[in-house]
Amino acid sequence: MRCAIKEGKIHNCDGIPIEDYIPQRLRWMTEWAEWYCKAQKKQYDTLDTACKACRSKGEDCTKVDSDCTPCKKACDNYKKVVDEWEKQWNEISYKYLILYEQAKTTSTNASRTVFLDAGPDYQQVVDFLTPIHKASIAARNRVKRAAPGPTEITAAAPNTPYSSAAGYIHQEIGNVGCNVQTQFCEKKHGDTTPTGENNTKYTFKQHPLDYEKACGCEDRIKEKVPKPPKEKPCDIVEEIYKRSNGGKDAINSCYRKNYNGLKLYFESV
Image (cartoon, rainbow, N blue to C red; front, side):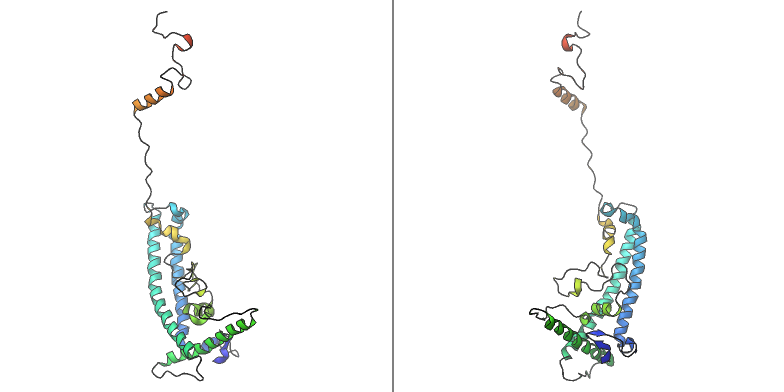
């Protein structure tokens, strides 16, 4: 099995398929990721069809728009499906983390550590991950020695690809096949700290990034444009009268009858 590990990565070993070295639990985890991506892609395609008209309106779409009805249904279903798979993923990634931490703890032991109370599958995974962890640490130390200046490798340094289930998935099968939301790392660059930057391509995001506005239509209420106040006839006349200097000046080029010396029609000649 050790010949499959080189510089912290799994490689072929004299033509023998890698799968022959990988414990069943880890093989099942990668297969689970592929199944999830097939389900996610199917839901994304449905969302794409149902929300085309609503999406074109951007933030102008509201809950009263007829285009929003089929889109809302697709958005709700997408979220429901993704949430169900995410619950499983949280359990899978947690169990992987326990196994990797165990491998990391025993990696400094002089000889192989045997877990008498653990099942054979547990032992296989720890045995498999231990040399991977050793090789990744060795690779990082080589980077440290090659650096032109002092480079300290600390607990705050970036995690190795295999230190999380998400990293293992992407290291082993690369692009799993999800649509748009393609990455299993919740934080950018595999960061696991609470302050890490959110990954917009996170595969368990409740709505795809390019459909957040369309899926938010249901939460937006169309603003009512207030009607201008209706003017009273007397107010209109009064305003005109003021602007014409009490009727002495022209109103829209219209002059009074006795303007410029002319007499009113009812005055005597």
